[in-house]
Amino acid sequence: MSEIRLEGVVAGYGFGDVLRGIDLVAASGQITCLIGPNGAGKSTVLRAISGLLRPRLGSILLDGHEISGLSPRRLLDLGVVHVPQERSLFPLMTVWENLLMGGFVQRDRRQVQRRAEELAERFPLIDERRHERAGSLSGGEQKTVEIARALMLEPKVMLIDEPSIGLAPKARGEVFKTLASLSDGGWTILLVEQNARSGLAVAHQGAVLDGGVVKLAGLAGGLLANDEVGRLYLGVDSKVGAS
Amino acid sequence: MTALLEVEEASKRFGGVVAVDACSLSVQAGTITGLIGPNGSGKTTVFNLVTGYLPADGGTIRFDGHVVRRPDPTRLARRGLIRTFQQARVFSNLTVVENLVLATPQSWWQAGRPRGERALAGELLADFNLAAHADTVAAELSFGQRKLLEFAATLMSRPQLVLLDEPAAGVNPVLVETIERHIRRLYAEGLTFLVVEHDMPFVMRLCDPVIVLDRGRKIAEGPARQVQQDPNVLDAYLGA
Image (cartoon, rainbow over all chains, first blue to last red; front, side):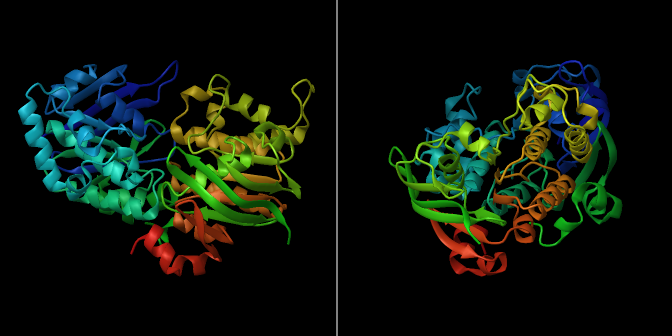
């Protein structure tokens, strides 16, 4: 069980700061969904935690230990994995080969094989399609394989950036099903999702980012029911039939 | 009504994969036509064939009454056919406001832009929460902000037909409503849209008719409500 805690994190690219003092907790073993307008800093929070961006100020704590400024490689060893927004499978490699790539930094190859078999059991899709080229899978199936690949290193913390982007409704449904299936696995998950209603629906906790600070945090159900959050961030019209 | 854009038996293959398979569809002038279908059904390839980003293997494309023999993005844009991309294409090293200025149809050497253009740019920046970033280089924008900028730039040009490739993907729901408002405004002014989008509530509210592609072919076309209940569409695209 692992908790991620951000205290006063300031970070950015070039001259400006995108994060202007983020205070945020991703509770141990729970899914926390970050929502907010474009440019609020949601993806930047994930990059700061996974070491892709070094914070200028503030602390990032993993179970009370300072991890800010560590390299992505070191953070992988500590159990922090990042599933980026864009599609990241190797399209010409098979599903199985892609899965094994998730264990690339692991020296014990037998352990990698064992772990892959475990995941194939957890995600039937991988077992059924293991010899097919990853590029031939639908968008939703590819995302599921990406999430499985991130689980190869038995992470403690998963950072998942907009998994449903660009997916057809059916495929999007598959991805949210996969996310929901992770909710009781004991992983600490920080999820960024622009389909805010669906994202909050699979999460335990939620946080609203705006202008590089956390405006509001609380139980996901509470944010969903909050009228002001609805008006400012979730969209009023999209309430009807949003999936 | 007359068809502003007509695609007849267009085909495109990539190696062994037939991305667009003798596909015919048309966009009537003065409509917001939706184009939906599963990932990999050929929607973006159709866009690429129509706008000249890819040469077709066969078929005919007609825009504004004329057969487009060798589609060329620049020439088509001058004739009023503008598009956006899933991964927004903006000029990364230019500022947000420079990107908008460049999108106006006047040539760059024309000094002093009409007041209306400047007012429109200011209004668009405010609408899409980009006003504070007017002088930020586009490279520093987030994925979603770049999409909003590209959309705003499209509005600065004076197109006849706008092809939007997933305008709502990765955009905050409240800003999606802003995009929708602008599409409706331009539609009321007589512009025609062809919109690829997976956000079904958005498509259902906005588009009529809706065309459905699967495996490179049209499998359904009609009013949104009707298409939504088509068993083939449910099976291929919407899921149970």
